[in-house]
Amino acid sequence: MMIRIEQDELGAVEVPAYAYYGIQTLRAAEVYPTAGTPVHRAFIAAMANVKIAAAKANLEIGALPQRIGNLIVQAAEEILRGKHSKHFIADYSQSASGDILNTNMNEILANRALEFLLEDKGNYSVVNPELHANLGQTSNGVMSASLQIAAYRLTQDLIKSLQDLITELLYKKEPLDQLQTPEISMYHSGAPLWLSRQFEDYGQCIQSDMTRLDKAVSQMNTICLNSAAMGRQPDHHSGFNERATSHLQELTQIELFASKSGEPSYHVVVELSSALKGLAVNLSKLCSDIRLGASLEQIDIHPANGIVHEKAVSLSQSAFQVMGLDHSISLAAEIGMPDRNAIPPIIIYNVMESLSLLINGIQSFTLGARGSSNSSSPVFR
Image (cartoon, rainbow, N blue to C red):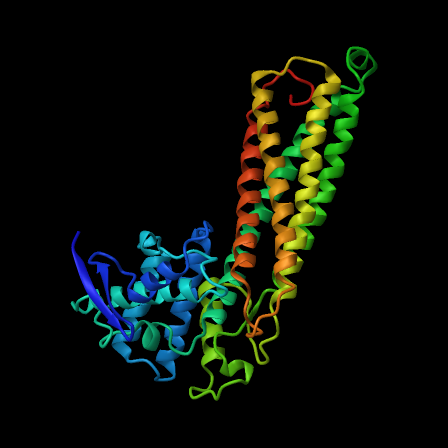
């Protein structure tokens, strides 16, 4: 394997020649072994948006050379389109904060910009990860802003999945209601009527969960990318945070506000996690009632319905996991962080994982329920 040599104040390190990550990411990987918390694609995309917004803000205030700033934007846009994912070798929990993942992103952007300039990777005297790609930003600010963007988008995807689930529950309710004639009821237990009422109740509960989710995520809209915005350092480039927030809002189409005080982000994240837990509890109860309804009928499970039951079991397992992740978030939120804008990486991972688990589980269950439409079972007709 071909290598290149990169050097810092600690000495030289061999880096794979193909790699867009660099010496700082490799050093961090040696000091902090991977914790098995891989970074979600949606979070990397959110980070890319943050880097684009920051670069554009720095270009506007004249803090970043025009050519270098444009190339950093171009490199971040490639990441936004899904390129270079194999070069993200850091995960969420390799340190107490998100500096390793942010460093990984900065080195990828710098080395890709160097390629655009026909320069060798690692020639940081031309394009520097910290002085150019991370100019005006703190790792905590980048991680916090990225979580807000990624969580908002995934929550909207989750709400859409829940809307489809409610539609399917109401669709399944109609044939169950039709079984409530005297002629048909004498051949069945009370399960169809009971399950029909349950579907209607769960539809209302899930609608309430959707409202709570939307309210919780709408509060994750305060951006603070640098320490100057929190008053701890002089702002040598006045207006950077405001300009970056404006660009980020334009890129994401999410209503965002520039922070003036750096208020803690914990409470809004904990509230979103709590809403996800409440939804998980209702989904778990729904899955249990579906299995119970089938057992009350005392019928053989039609192959199509067997799929639904398997999907219900799978969704309930995802719901259990989300409940556990919420408990972990609550514990992590109790610890103190020197930076008021910091969010422990385990909180970021658990929120992203909870959203992903619920989206995938609900979509899988809904598709399975639709596939049972031709089944002869009164539970899934």
